[in-house]
Length: 322
Image 1 (cartoon, rainbow, N blue to C red):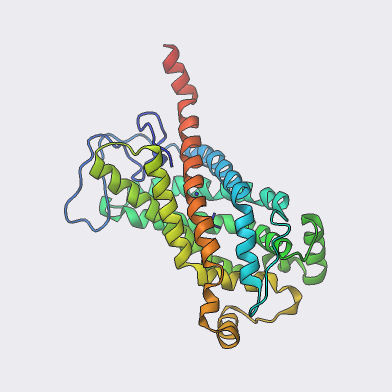
Image 2 (tube, helix red, strand yellow; image 1 turned 90 degrees about the horizontal axis):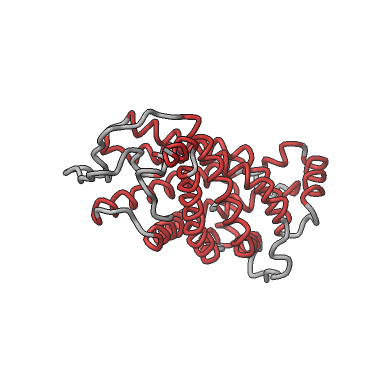
């Protein structure tokens, strides 16, 4: 999924908004470290509930905005991947399934960021500075696992509707369960994790590490265009790398009760044998475009929402009145 930074006021924004999870005053590059790292000064107490709450609100907001804006591109990508051989794709109904998809994207994005932010902060406090990338990778994977329980049924319904198998989300749920059982809503779950766990971990790690490195080099906070470019680059690169996994996931999710593929390995073997290895890169153009633009929008909305929430905390409001 996937799935998407604006400059932050580090004195007011909550600690999770910084890639290091620590104050960014007096930044110094630590020599001979493979990953970007930051020397920390005084650390604030770990406020799990606040980080969780703000992460849930920011993640949900960012997920809904990016999904609404870029849904047509995702539909085209799905139809390209679903088409076998040299078949033509239909360009009608590009917003088919959006409403039902948003009903799943909102909680899924909220759960992901709600898990990612506190996990990242805790890991950054536990691990040495030069292992910050490990914290980002691990937190991204944990967020992906937590969100997958909502993401997978949402993705199954969305892609069945994008390929025009069903007219509405309620019909899709009812018919999938009646024909395939409840497990039909989790069709392709293994392939989804195979795609999304590496995707989430790599995308957020690239994004966080680039922001740390840029801040250290520039010795200042990033401005809005700089953050947007970093988000777009992280998304586009990760999207390109994980396209074969996305093709496999799509084929397994849209096959329904036909069961052309017996699993991930059989799916790969069949695609390569019948369509050639390049078929594993189907939809790479729309996917890179979608996730690249989406990365810019997602991280931009995410960071702005976090900043807004931080600036409007009760403790900040009270200090302004004093």
